[in-house]
Length: 221
Image (cartoon, rainbow, N blue to C red):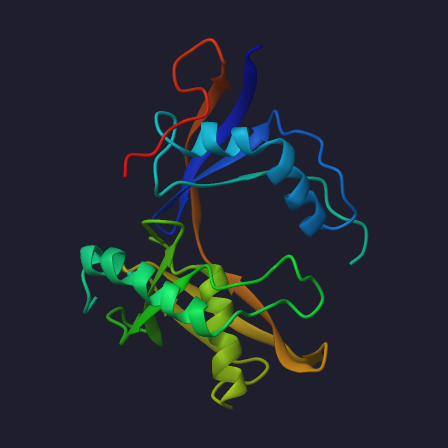
């Protein structure tokens, strides 16, 4: 049976993204982590089919429009980053495993951030984030920027109300801000906010048909 998905393709500060606006499955779970687990168990074929070749590619990020829950890149070249990042991640994993204090399903080291002095006027720092098996974020990376702001705040270099302009490997920037400093599960933490740009580049109606070749997508390694 053919499964149809209506997608909005675009990029966030240069990093390609595909937003699935129609055709998302109903996910069970009271938290976003539980919904993520349900998706991984029952619907990972959708991720592979829409994100991998021939419909996507290794650099593609994607997401679904989901109903809200109740309650609340250069001193090192891209090729060098791709070669070194898996080794760095493997060595860090061998000695340290971070675990979310309230959700143990969020654990281990998945991303590697490389940092440098900024090139763009007004930027405070530059970065390139490696994720997956061979992807480098083209955008300044909101997740990585939030983590870097938390580290700077822990060192006393950022305070509530301060802004932090983060530059990507291609020169695009986002503006981060520390909204609040607080204690979270016994650990000093911050509530970050990130502001940047995102642009739609077109609409796609994609389908996954098991009668056609490569319904689950493929990766060339």
